[in-house]
View 1 (tube, helix red, strand yellow):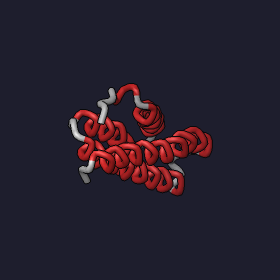
View 2 (cartoon, one colour):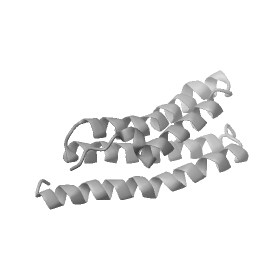
View 3 (tube, helix red, strand yellow):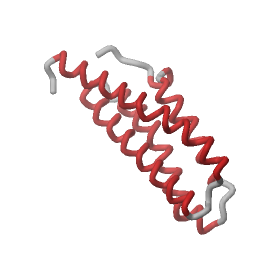
Length: 127
């Protein structure tokens, strides 16, 4: 598999945008909200890009696939924490409307990239 610079990946760029938006929103919350939901959502959002980067740097397609799966899990965890924040009135409709399109764009693109890496593994005969 040809090595790709993770910083040029659209999924990585989207993950950075998402993580920064989450950070900006949570930084305005009160202490209890920051200490509970806030820390969780920041960690999960930051973890998306971190896993994309780490998988890219591991050197094998199998490792890359494993970390892309973790990135996808972190993306879904971020979606969960956004739902909790919204239900607890920690995040406004306006903020939600800013973040959801990023998530809705990232999910299929991340899955597509994961499928591409998986197909590369299949073609090489290494499962």
